[in-house]
Image (cartoon, rainbow, N blue to C red):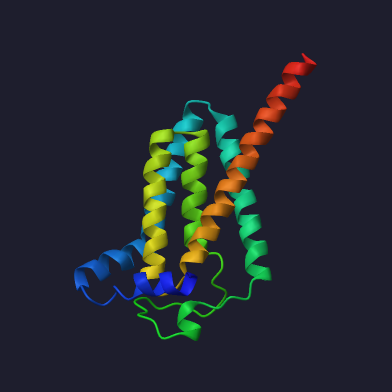
Length: 176
């Protein structure tokens, strides 16, 4: 299923130079715009003295990247272009495909910002993260499962921080 879905997306590559250019940008550069916009939102939150939500976002990002690192070390899945003939539109080093680092970062920021800083911006970043993920498949460097794993890791990390925050808030209320 993962390979079939990969081919459905990746087989569209190479048909339109303009669309390929957009996907190459989304696969390689869109993450930097997400980082920059996230930094602005964090800066605004800190300016407004919203330190706790920024801290929670940081914890969620840490948990996401820790889990992704563990998964990449236990997974041995090579990138699509290492084992199959694909439409590879960007140069990339061989290595472990699962999970996608770009998608992990994009989804972690999107879900974390949604949960802790701004629902509106979180929704916009989630759309951008989906575009990053689809583009990584389009250009031939990841399978759809790599993108799905990144999203699942990110959402679980954010939910863990949300649950811990609620638990701590309840414990503080019970102690007072």
